[in-house]
Picture 1 (cartoon, one colour):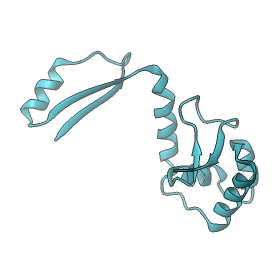
Picture 2: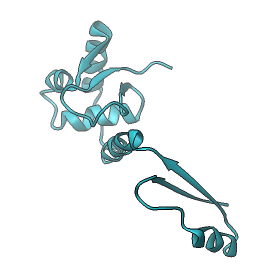
Picture 3: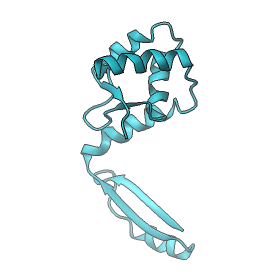
Length: 122
Protein backbone atom coordinates (compact mmCIF):
# COMPACT_ATOMS: atom_id res chain seq x y z
CA UNK A 1 0.00 0.00 0.00
CA UNK A 2 1.06 3.56 -0.63
CA UNK A 3 0.65 6.56 1.67
CA UNK A 4 0.49 9.69 -0.50
CA UNK A 5 1.19 13.18 0.82
CA UNK A 6 -0.13 15.65 -1.76
CA UNK A 7 0.41 19.25 -0.81
CA UNK A 8 1.37 22.68 -2.03
CA UNK A 9 5.09 23.40 -1.74
CA UNK A 10 4.51 26.41 0.51
CA UNK A 11 2.20 24.63 2.95
CA UNK A 12 4.81 22.58 4.78
CA UNK A 13 8.32 21.27 4.18
CA UNK A 14 9.06 17.58 3.74
CA UNK A 15 8.80 15.83 7.08
CA UNK A 16 11.35 13.08 7.65
CA UNK A 17 9.27 11.34 10.28
CA UNK A 18 6.47 10.70 7.76
CA UNK A 19 8.67 8.38 5.71
CA UNK A 20 9.83 6.52 8.82
CA UNK A 21 6.29 6.17 10.22
CA UNK A 22 4.98 4.87 6.88
CA UNK A 23 7.80 2.29 6.71
CA UNK A 24 7.10 1.20 10.28
CA UNK A 25 3.43 0.59 9.42
CA UNK A 26 4.21 -1.25 6.21
CA UNK A 27 3.37 1.52 3.77
CA UNK A 28 5.41 3.05 0.99
CA UNK A 29 5.53 6.85 1.40
CA UNK A 30 5.31 9.17 -1.61
CA UNK A 31 5.28 12.95 -1.44
CA UNK A 32 3.87 14.85 -4.41
CA UNK A 33 4.36 18.59 -4.30
CA UNK A 34 2.16 20.83 -6.41
CA UNK A 35 2.89 24.41 -7.26
CA UNK A 36 0.49 27.26 -6.60
CA UNK A 37 -0.85 27.19 -10.17
CA UNK A 38 -2.73 23.98 -9.35
CA UNK A 39 -4.30 25.42 -6.21
CA UNK A 40 -7.44 26.67 -7.99
CA UNK A 41 -7.88 23.22 -9.61
CA UNK A 42 -8.06 21.60 -6.18
CA UNK A 43 -10.34 24.29 -4.76
CA UNK A 44 -12.68 24.05 -7.76
CA UNK A 45 -12.71 20.25 -7.59
CA UNK A 46 -13.53 20.35 -3.87
CA UNK A 47 -16.45 22.71 -4.52
CA UNK A 48 -17.78 20.54 -7.35
CA UNK A 49 -17.62 17.37 -5.26
CA UNK A 50 -20.27 18.78 -2.94
CA UNK A 51 -22.72 18.15 -5.81
CA UNK A 52 -21.63 14.58 -6.60
CA UNK A 53 -24.98 13.06 -5.67
CA UNK A 54 -27.15 15.91 -6.94
CA UNK A 55 -29.93 14.59 -9.21
CA UNK A 56 -30.11 15.66 -12.85
CA UNK A 57 -33.55 15.59 -14.39
CA UNK A 58 -33.84 14.50 -18.03
CA UNK A 59 -35.42 17.87 -18.87
CA UNK A 60 -32.46 19.77 -17.38
CA UNK A 61 -29.89 17.62 -19.15
CA UNK A 62 -31.61 17.97 -22.50
CA UNK A 63 -32.04 21.74 -22.16
CA UNK A 64 -28.40 22.39 -21.39
CA UNK A 65 -26.92 19.91 -23.87
CA UNK A 66 -29.13 21.23 -26.67
CA UNK A 67 -27.97 24.77 -25.93
CA UNK A 68 -24.34 23.73 -25.84
CA UNK A 69 -24.74 21.86 -29.14
CA UNK A 70 -26.00 25.07 -30.70
CA UNK A 71 -23.53 27.55 -29.15
CA UNK A 72 -20.51 25.25 -28.50
CA UNK A 73 -19.74 26.88 -25.14
CA UNK A 74 -21.44 29.32 -22.82
CA UNK A 75 -20.49 31.20 -19.69
CA UNK A 76 -21.74 29.59 -16.50
CA UNK A 77 -24.14 32.51 -15.98
CA UNK A 78 -25.85 31.77 -19.32
CA UNK A 79 -26.11 28.06 -18.44
CA UNK A 80 -27.76 29.03 -15.17
CA UNK A 81 -30.24 31.15 -17.14
CA UNK A 82 -31.02 28.19 -19.42
CA UNK A 83 -31.83 26.17 -16.28
CA UNK A 84 -33.74 28.96 -14.51
CA UNK A 85 -36.71 26.63 -13.95
CA UNK A 86 -34.50 24.24 -12.00
CA UNK A 87 -34.45 24.29 -8.20
CA UNK A 88 -30.64 24.41 -8.15
CA UNK A 89 -29.07 25.25 -11.51
CA UNK A 90 -25.55 25.37 -10.08
CA UNK A 91 -26.00 21.89 -8.61
CA UNK A 92 -27.25 20.54 -11.94
CA UNK A 93 -24.31 22.01 -13.88
CA UNK A 94 -21.80 20.78 -11.29
CA UNK A 95 -23.31 17.29 -11.30
CA UNK A 96 -23.26 17.25 -15.11
CA UNK A 97 -19.57 18.18 -15.04
CA UNK A 98 -18.80 15.42 -12.55
CA UNK A 99 -20.69 12.89 -14.69
CA UNK A 100 -18.89 14.11 -17.83
CA UNK A 101 -21.84 15.54 -19.70
CA UNK A 102 -20.16 18.96 -19.73
CA UNK A 103 -16.65 20.36 -19.23
CA UNK A 104 -15.66 23.24 -16.98
CA UNK A 105 -12.11 24.60 -16.97
CA UNK A 106 -10.87 24.10 -13.42
CA UNK A 107 -7.33 25.39 -13.98
CA UNK A 108 -7.54 29.01 -15.13
CA UNK A 109 -9.40 30.56 -12.20
CA UNK A 110 -11.95 29.84 -9.49
CA UNK A 111 -15.34 28.89 -10.92
CA UNK A 112 -17.42 32.02 -11.45
CA UNK A 113 -20.12 33.51 -13.69
CA UNK A 114 -17.67 33.92 -16.60
CA UNK A 115 -16.33 30.33 -16.45
CA UNK A 116 -16.90 28.64 -19.80
CA UNK A 117 -19.02 25.49 -19.96
CA UNK A 118 -18.90 23.22 -23.02
CA UNK A 119 -20.13 19.78 -23.93
CA UNK A 120 -17.78 16.97 -22.89
CA UNK A 121 -15.92 15.26 -25.74
CA UNK A 122 -13.74 12.16 -25.33
